[in-house]
Length: 448
Image (cartoon, rainbow, N blue to C red):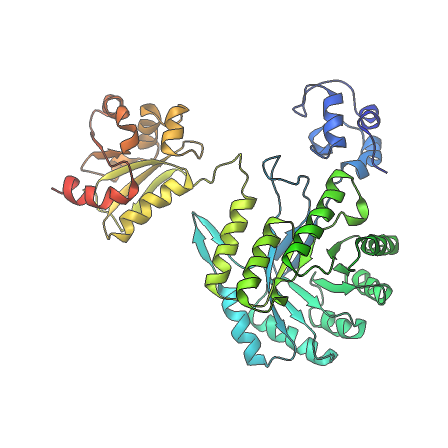
């Protein structure tokens, strides 16, 4: 049973040292009870108290990790319903499914592009998380053979799908030593599937269409010694996915109901056509899947899902940043101009992409503005003449750029005089307000 804030407080040092970043031990205890803080934030709690507080300090949604050959897919460890309350930690894994009645060539044709898919979105690499192999033939050897074919092409984590323990046994033998998710235990096979999960140290999905039955079955599996569980409520339609996903998450977070405190797996790939599959996957990302199994892999379907996932699971309190430094666009020469911007990722890529796509060459000085956009950083005092001059010297721009033309963003034209004072050897120009106008500015003004 979870401890109350007062019960937790009695086990803390009660020194009010503030090392946990809370004003008092009582305040910290209340945050622990509400699952809004972690016990590790207190460096002075005794080992005895840690043992007693372990259950109360555990995240309400258990962390489940699938691993294979250096790749991992994690789900769980979430402590809030909405990202603005704190943040979401582990992005839901996107898995592409193949079936064991497909030929080896068909499997490779589907798996290869999914495994190789990699695009860069505002400096972040987007890619698939893993693959799912489903036994539809009922033949243990066919299942194992399909898994081995997948392993010829990809080393990403796997979800193995079969409710037949004999079939699952052969599948696990084909990837001995890996940590897949095996799907699924139900009322008929749970004991045999639990033995397989314990023997191979894997995670185990649990399937029940009734939430009470689902909770009862997870408790049986935990009593058996299987801790890493994943939930499937049987929901396949939009309204069912939303209702059951939200209910499971709320029970785990708000009621601290441990039998449902596990990641959720969904199957948008069971939809009749790709358009609905995409909609179901998008909803699963938002509310509240941990693992998502798709049947369709095409760039036009996957890219918006990965971008959506990135937007939701990016910490809203930490802007997406690029590393400050001097960047080269289209192999610039010493007499090419120097553009200046902040290290907010979207700002950087807007500038770099416009210049690069126009076939123009330039140097781009990205200053450390703590990830803020140009106007926000200027208003906050994080993008000023002193910082710009400091980064010109820090990144040894003088050694690479000979023409001494520095272009400020148009929104901060007010800085031009101050920058000239800080950098008297440089000619300071005020560029356009929008990145889209940079190519014309470079062509008409800087090279005139």
